[in-house]
Length: 161
Image (cartoon, rainbow, N blue to C red; front, side, top):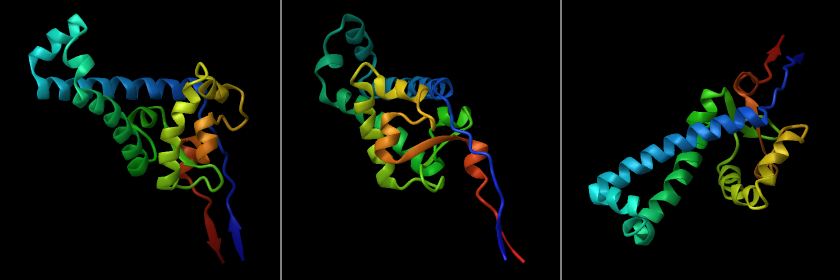
C-alpha cells in the first residue's frame, strides 16, 4: 500500500520577493559595473559622470547591461531554482502544478514576461499582493510559483509497505 505524507505549502509573499529581487539587482549592478570598468577602463567612469560617451553610445555596454541580468537570473534559476537574492530569502521557483523543478522553457518565459509585469506601472508585480498563490503575471504566464524553500524542497514522501 502506498501512502503520501502531507506537507504545508507556503508561497513566498510580495515583500520577501521584492527584497530578494533588490538584493539580486544590487549584485548584478556591482558585477556589471566591475566588468564594464575592466573592459573600458577609468575613462568609462569619467564619461559616465558627464552623461556622455560610452555610457550612451557603445553597443557593448548596452549588451552587457541587458544580457548579464538575463544570464544571471535564468542561469541561477536553472541551477538552483532561485537567484542568490531569492535563496537568501529562503525562496525557490517551482512548477505551479507539480511544485517540482520548473522546465527551462518555463524559466525563459518567466524572465521575458517580467517585461509584461513591469509595463503597466508594475501592476504585474503588485498582483502578487492580491493573488491567493502569490503569483505575479510573469509567474502565471510561465506556470510557476515562488515557494518558501522548506516547502518546495520537501517532496511528498512515498512509503511502500
